[in-house]
Image (tube, rainbow, N blue to C red; front, side, top):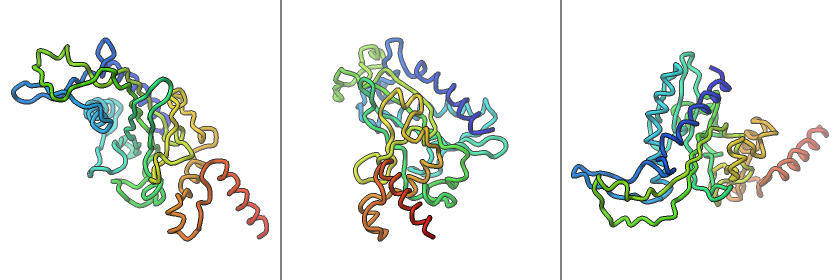
Length: 265
């Protein structure tokens, strides 16, 4: 299977997830947690909690998707390994899929980070926090899960019975799902603060269409840019003084300076 074939199949698959996870009035189907005494405890809209539950709900569907198309779905052997999902076809081709979620308001998401630009991203033939090397994968795809946080407040001290599900207001609603190659929705700035994470674009229309700043430049430019990116602390530790560049404009200036040096050799 080619990476284009896999991407097209996954794109069609994720189109079904909104209907699967929403009620008829666009609320999340999850209302809370239930214990053996059939007490229902409401949940928080904390992004980490919400995201993990969505992933748990989708993994069986993604496993069925894999089997329907002659693939195996592999989950990471350790927590925090990249990627979240590995799809393997019958010829041994690997496709990486990483869950990324955020809440949105109007036409923008709160923020997306697309994984590390350090470690496995630079040492692509080694297994670093991965079950396979980065270069073993034919494609690296983001499965985006966007949602609105509900306006209503949830009192987590309340306990409900299973016959009261209709009165529990879901903490999130109005899902948007998409699949895009990581490089097409990457930004040219880190995801947050001084971390070693690739930032993602935040405009929803551009996310859905894969129209990040590298989309017209190509995956090779994305790879070169982020494999050579240093924050201030890492630049000092590497002995290069200041970062070589901090956005695409200064990256172009850096490449021109390298080309000038090369022309004198």
